[in-house]
Length: 414
Image 1 (cartoon, rainbow, N blue to C red):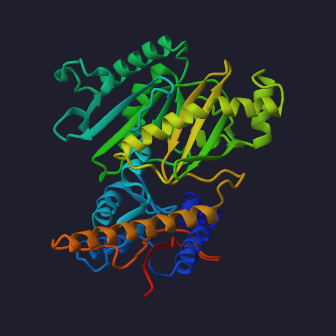
Image 2: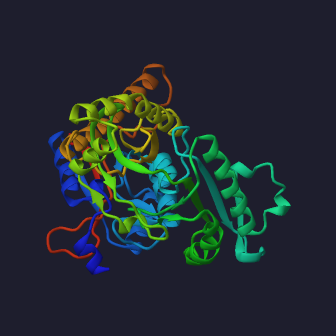
């Protein structure tokens, strides 16, 4: 574990020590007091949750710079079964600035949907010890199948692959390979191309036996494998489309995880477009980017709806372009996405945006309290009376090899 932290300490840009310091610096510059809560493992994370539940954290704004997955406390990720209950407690008592609880969960669990995705089916598993194999499975695309016939996991997965083949055919794709994407995983560590016939056996023999015993549910996304030429990543800040960059995984071999295939550089990704005849030059690449703008805006609209109408403060939309020039939504990254190398927006600008949002929430709540007083009504407890920003992040300082998460809380200086 120490080797992991030393070589690759951060889960994403937002958990890095540099970003954490930027956030605290900006909060102080805007007249806020910063209080950090160190999180360096399970016991401290659970202790923080108890502090929130017992009211020992003063209401205010919170930025929790950690993310969920299905393993242990590594890479600034917390097991989902212990992450979301506490994150939701924070959201009920504070203005949760980061991450968006709803969007983070949809992204991490691979449960988001879009008409722009390559043909996809979702398999939802829940533990049922009394059933053969110990799992109950459902699939949205098989809703018309009698539930009494859906006890055998292999049978249901086979039916789901058949449904995927039909969807792929309707979209003009051949289902030569299936991309299996396991929920609550990061960095392509549980994304693998498989032959369609191999999917049921792989899930039954490889995936389900390795699911941690604490995990009661699991979603697996099966997607028609697209012949990727290049991938466009577009960053959105406060609802505004900002920086974009081409960055593409090299092709992973069938049966090998995507994490084993390294990234192509920005230049190599653009060259792939030119070599495929999709763009004659850099100007052609730029025109292709602009042709995808309306699709990025559609994904932003879908994410806003998933967040209950709240525009995501930070979002990254990844589109994959195939050999025919068609663009498919590869991933809708939640608030935990890395920034593009073009630095638009920069980490500093993102930190400032988070603090600005905290200040707006304080102002709004204070105005609400004043209206109640003016109308002769008993004011609701104002969480804006003391401005507080909370952030949990797990990166290490220099020469530090253990996870060092931080929860920062700030309040406006009086």
